[in-house]
Image (tube, rainbow, N blue to C red; front, side, top):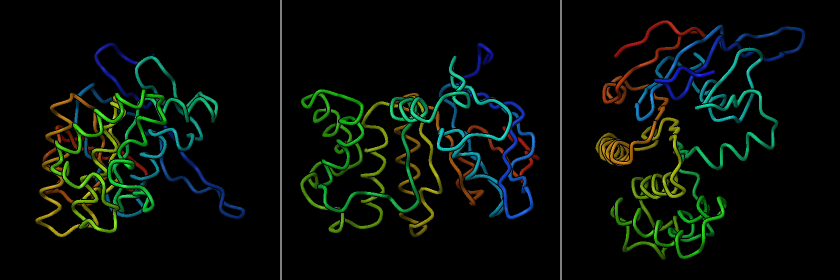
Amino acid sequence: MIPDNKFICFEHIIKQFQEGDQRRTVLADLSATIRRGEFVAMVGRSGSGKSTLLNLLAGLDQPTSGEIWVGDTCISGLSDRDRTLFRRDHIGFVFQFFNLIPTLTVRENVLLTAELNGWKDADAKTQANKLLDAVGLGDRANVFPDKLSGGEQQRVAIARALCANPDIILADEPTGNLDADTGASILNLLTRLVREQNKTMIMVTHSMDVAALADRILKLDHGHLVETKS
């Protein structure tokens, strides 16, 4: 059971993959807790296990051993279907490469998460319009993603991630595909909206400048949690 003052807890997480005759350990006995409303950055070199851990926290994969708790739910013990439903109800994603659907308009892309969560059409549209205004794209709602710059597409992705009002935002290198100035603007926007709405955010990044904006930094090295900075 997760401690009362924590929100996300992973305990003794090991993740291994079979490669031919060998078992490769990607994550080695990781344990940490994250408070509700906290912004945590995960840093480390390529191959250190950051994205693997993010996938486990998202319920996209299961650990070889150990437990992952979100509130009172042990997501590592859920079935594939129940993990999918939990992810849909509680987690929003912001990706490096935006992952917008090119055949949907900006508004339709943002609406998607709320619609999948069973929101009423009127409520979903009100929420989408509010978030598009918040990210400065209220006047671009009816255009398609290919008409937007990279920074604008990432702003749409942020609005989409927040549209179903998830408890947790998982961000995987959200500024990695943007130039420095645009990336800084996007990061400031994402951080501001997450803090205003008291979301818990876990962000994978290679940049210590980006990580410096977080409340806490978890550093991974060859699958080990080697450092935690507040």
